[in-house]
Length: 116
Length: 208
Image (tube, each protein chain N blue to C red):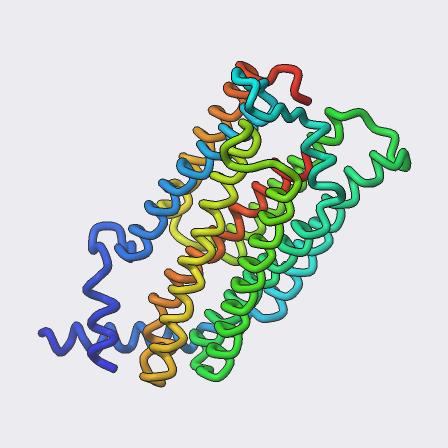
């Protein structure tokens, strides 16, 4: 009985191994996207300070926060393999993240309402 | 090999089919979200607060921007950590496809990137202290050095972890392979999380 279990497990892992293809191209593509988004993030405040990007502070902050979120999501989904993995892992990570965002907004509202 | 397979299967939760080591790692990373979240929020809320004591240095957001300038060092550090995330995921890909040489090469590259980051952070700290901002003389300095210092400590722990994996794979060439890669995946999750934290710190602390 135990032998049958072991054989099934070995077969299962062999199948898993056979199914694993290299994802190098995808990882490199994601890296270049992350690279480009980071470059854009760096450029926005510089262009604004130099007067080449005539936007107010709040849109600038919103743009930077959006780019940051996009970068973080890409790292989590593709590099940490949460895309396609069990939902339980994601829940364990996303739930604290939501609480932190709420805490962040509350603290900024309380202590630094005019910071930005 | 049968031993490795048995190890993989017995550590899963039969109820949900979840790997308990992975579950434990994600739970740990969730707790780390709280930890770094608290530090980031504290920095953002307190960095412009006027000090009560006159011996403390006052720093508003404009002064902070002037201090960081165009963030040349930190931008380079951000690119280094992004690069290290790529090398780490390529190392995991190498071990999953039973390519030990590729695995070791990219793991070594990740360690190198981590060391470069730590060197850059030491340089940045030296520069900021030279500008007169220390952990003791302003709210900005206290919260900034605590946050980035803890992040640097996490990078250091990651470098030690990855180095131990590399040494282990050199001493036992067949230890990590397409059937037994969970140890590498755990280290990878930790490393990507460290990169993820820097993604947040870079935007919230340096750019905004």
